[in-house]
Amino acid sequence: MRTIRLKRSTAALGTAAALVSATLAAGAVTAPAADASPGARHGQTRDLEAYGTAVAAARAAEAGIDWRDCPADWNLPAPIQCGHVTVPLDYAKPYGKQITLTVDRVGNTGTKAQRQGALIYNPGGPGGSGLRFPARVTAKNPLWAKTAEAYDFVGFDPRGVGKSTPISCVDPQEFVKAPKMDPVPDSEADKRAQRKLAREYAEGCAERSGEMLPHMTTPNTARDLDVIRAALGEKKLNYLGVSYGTYLGAVYGTLFPDHVRRMVVDSVVNPSRQKIWYQANLDQDVAFETRWKDWQDWVAKNDTTYHLGDTRAEVQAQWLKLRATAEKAPIGGVVGPAELLSFFQSAPYYDSAWASVASVFSAYAGGDTQALVDAAAPDLSDTAGNASSENGNAVYTAVECADAKWPTDWRTWDRDNTRLHRDYPFLTWSNAWMNLPCATWPTKQHTPVDVKTGKGLPPVLIVQSERDAATPYEGAVELHQRFKGSRLITERDAGSHGVTGLANPCVNDRVDTYLLTGEVDRRDVTCAPHATPKP
Figure 1 (spheres, rainbow, N blue to C red):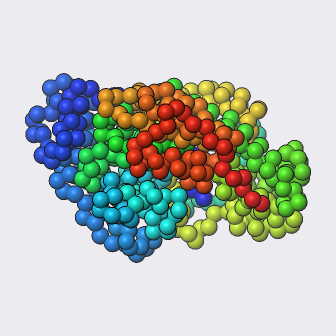
Figure 2 (figure 1 turned 30 degrees about the vertical axis):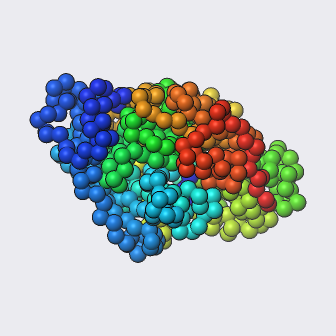
Figure 3 (figure 1 turned 45 degrees about the vertical axis):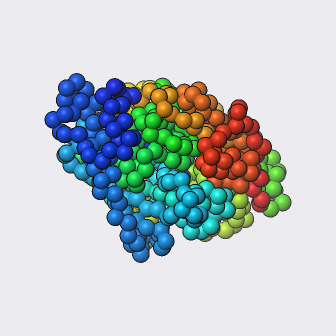
């Protein structure tokens, strides 16, 4: 699922996999001999990958992590420390090419007796960096103070991302250059042009990162997570995943059920094989339209502040006027409809963006064009930020394209997105073009993991808002049904993406209790919404 950065053969492990996994769970640090590979006996890729994971985890447990001060330009000051973990590029070939994962940590703030281990975090994407997670402790974030007493906070850059062995699909400065084509096509010629761009993007990924692409899958990232667990000296995993991080958690819980100690998943990707990933993105288009209207209602309610209209229809009319202006001639020469959408979609994503987006919109309507240009146009001088944006998009594309089989017939895409656009125009075509490289992806596309409960999986805590745009509510219900013994906390009448990061004691207290004690409510819980943003 696309995640704003203020802006995506795998099968359940078989018997042989369970055997090698049990070896590591018991704390062994000696890898099995290469000629003893279960996969070599059974000739099955899944067994080879299970064996490879055991080998890599055993090596990592023995080596540990050489923790050092983080480089100064990473903006991760002491006491946060950084280190590296080595993993196989291909888990079916554990003695072959290796790649590097960058991890960081800050120790628990409580006593040695209070410490319960490491809590590992993934923020989503695919393509998001988790390295800022320990800063929740150093910044004294009150929502996480109790959990921080018990846990080291550990972040990491997944394979392909940022400070780990990275991938790229296009020159970063070209990637951010504006204005881009209007996502909404006016003609068949527009569609052909967008199809050409998508095909060229897929080709660029192969040219710049071809060796990595076949192995950029969620199951491989889950295996990486297990190797990190071992490198940390942890027998079992404590995990917090948000957005795509929930799917990573779901796959980990399926592949390594007896390695899970505590798992919180927040804003849940629908793990159904039928949803990963083509249908999930179509579902997202519908949910975004709903949350876009929620934001417009809020803007209209606060018309005395924003002066954009006191009804949703009036705010929508202002949006369509702005969009038409940018389509006719990009604002400031650089902000066209595509750039507008990239900026405005943060409002349906996060309540925290409601006021800032509305303020920029209001300033433009009042005659301040520069405010909109500053907010929505790329900054070509920010080469580091542009490289990060390009890398994040490359990983998003690589993982979603490799995880599952996508339609290859353009007529399927055209039919589905034309139909959706009629009723849900805010995001539909933009999302389609973002994902279209998967139609011509140059490497193997796999079958998604069948997410389900395995022996030893403890209760998983699922947190979800009812009106989430990026990960619709049905995904949380689906995972809840698949993970037996899980508990679902629903934040009703709310839709911000990433519930555990918001101040809502009904949610926060239960997350703390679960992480600190392992206890969950006897039944599912519905919480009142967090506070509505102030204008």
